[in-house]
Length: 354
Image (cartoon, rainbow, N blue to C red; front, side):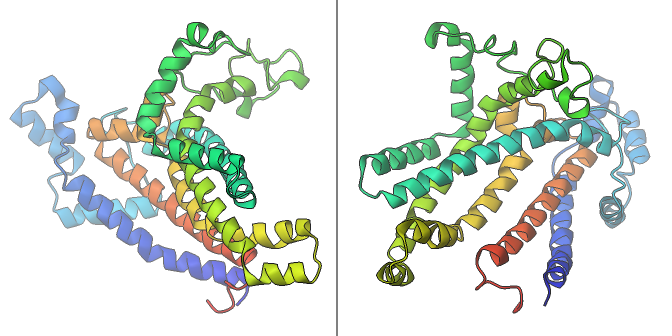
């Protein structure tokens, strides 16, 4: 079986999973106590107005009819409109407005978790029972144990008082930005259009607002908080995986044959140690890229996590269903990517037998 056929098979198998996920999301959203009619009418609620609005929204139709419309709309990407948050605005328009900030946050969260957690874990595994091993292991456990919401609140408090606590003003450091603010991503659409010099687009754009450096600084505290738990997981699992591979028989055989230690570590130990990390990275990437409701709310990132929170609180049923569907697509896509990564890292888990 070729890799393309393998990918096609995985895509076909994902369809029942998505159907089941959208069915469950419909049951949770539409059978929940959420009342969009009361949320829309607010203080103008009367039985007559509620009855008329319920009829105009189609909520008086049989449940199976609403289910069919819900499934067909999602699967044909006819996502409908928001009912409460921005009534009449397309759900797709709202998603595209909030999505870039979540991707920006998730991108840096994944990088922090992968490029800090895994190297620390591999270093600890290559140097067991040393001071560096104990320090890295202790740090990973501490970071993993701290709840995200608590760490977010503490970090906001520290950065808000950084002038007196740390000796420098975080808000004025490098570029002027607020501690809690949505990242401005103007540089993505026009990196050199509003800068004094094309070579300085990453740092100088309208006085720093909208530049790459400003956007990075604005999202960095939230990315540290969001990636901290994943960083601790990957460090611990990476350390264990390296220790197991160092003591494997094939490594001892390679040493007996005179293979240099550097080649053993880079070509054999590290590659095989990555195998148990693949599902960990894929599973946590969903949480990181999908955004965290608490972290986005505390740092005012205003991404999809924040939008999901607002849709839940304000009973915006159609928008809530769309967001659940998007998160389901993201999870299924990451699982497919995980399967493909397995075939690249470990030839024993080949797609020929799938």
